[in-house]
Length: 384
Image 1 (cartoon, rainbow, N blue to C red):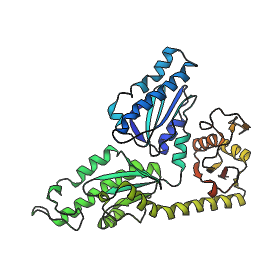
Image 2 (image 1 turned 90 degrees about the vertical axis):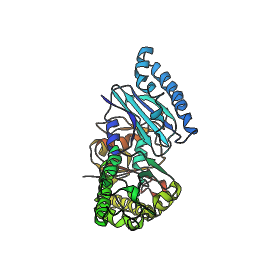
Image 3 (image 1 turned 180 degrees about the vertical axis):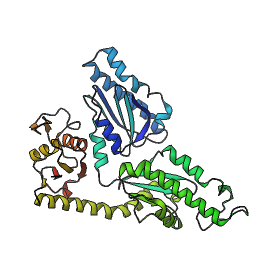
């Protein structure tokens, strides 16, 4: 039984877990949320309204008793104050028999309450596949914070428990923080006679190593997001040296992060991220153009659909905000048919293709219309 009443951070592993659930009915609920008081008092009310929509949908197919049984795990969340106090800019909740997951979203989604044979994961897919996402590690000797977002906004991520525990233990008895006077920088400490400088340096290194390991294992390896370090200038070299995080960028924000607003931190981080963001987009488009020239790439919808069901797609590029009113109707032949879609925000061809690519172990990237290397809304790089 896979259940969690705590909100989780989105990553590829979690999305794959959602895609693997196929026991009907699968309930998907999306809603934007407020983080601060008193606006966040509206969150449970908005949730209850969406629950009414779910109830109406379920009652079209199931008895009242079955409907209440399916909704019970969600109803239990309604009055859990701690649950609603740990939301981000958006919330996605997924429930099926023996399964309940709540996911914090770093962007506010449109409200949606959906009952189907599988979970509706399109908003999560698009969030994961956007190429402008990144994380910022705000590191000082007094606190550790992790932020996630894009060029427009950063949202603080609730830290994995291991980080809190490890960072507290890391300094240990080697360094008593109460003896620190003045700025919290490696070069500006006044130590009690009982604290030797070499002991303090060792404590700093242990502290940074614990933070680096926890962030790498619990976030970077799962999300593959570029990571920007925000810390005092004298802390960057040591952290870079011991980090071992492939997603950590060499350039960082060399300012005490406790003095920065979230808005200013997002602005400074994007100045670092943007050149890498543009380079990766150009590199991807160049890869596709070369693959197409070599007979290993296509923008033809039928050809891409067949390659997807055969597991031949290495990388799928789809156009942001594009809706194609068709569905893959045969997962053996890759047959595509035009369909009247009742709710195109829920299902369309690009949604089908994206989900199928991920099920088959392919990578999916969303590009804006002006960056797309094709006119069809899709471009694929084949494995063979």
